Amino acid sequence: MNVSIIGTGNMAKGIGTRLVSGGHSVTIHAQDEAKGKELAELLKKVNNTAVVSVVPVGTDSDEIVIVATPYAEIVNVGKEYNGLTGKVVVDITNPVDFNTFQLIPEAGQSGAQEVAKILSEANVVKAFNTTLAGTLEAGEVEGKELDVFIASDDDEAKAKVSELVKTSGMRPVDVGTLSEARHLEGFGLIQMKIQDQIGTGWMSALKFLG
Image 1 (tube, helix red, strand yellow):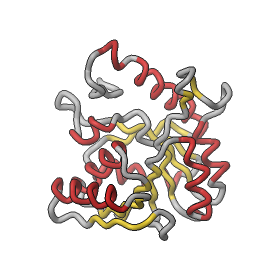
Image 2 (cartoon, one colour):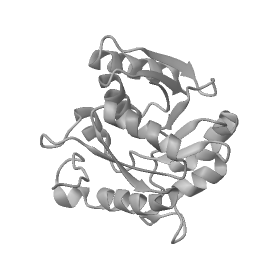
Image 3 (cartoon, helix red, strand yellow):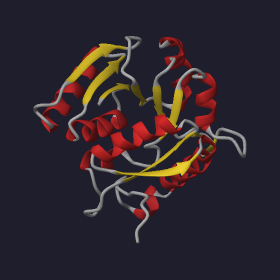
Image 4 (tube, helix red, strand yellow):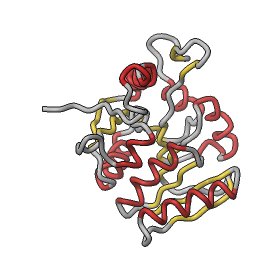
């Protein structure tokens, strides 16, 4: 598949690593061209046959778009891309107020549902918010493949993202509609809160075993 990643940070690097490992083509949409080129070179080292390109933010995107930006930047992304109409948009964010370390949306609501309101003409899928960047780069934790929990109101979009996850060496787990993203975001918050306590150096993973 051809996939656009908006952003050049740690999550863009982690997800990009898994995508090129699975043979997918990646287009990096970068505010900072130098950072975009640096990320592209890193991904090409992962798979020297991978097709990786860098374009400016706002450039036309592929059908699947992974928005690897902070939650607060989603509004700007929508403006820069005219709402990403008709695109499958993967929301990886955890909508956390880092002053209070609580979720921003009111109880019963999710950040992903707010993203879907902002990008009302896109097909929004929640995924990757519980997979930490370092584990994505490694592709596993303690020899076990990563679980990627996926939620969406659009079954076709969910199927496309699930296939992308599977072919990139991870296990897609369908948790239901976009309203379930509230629970995924809660998992993401707890995972961040306990990192110092469990001492894994941000290399932990949420996975169902059995």
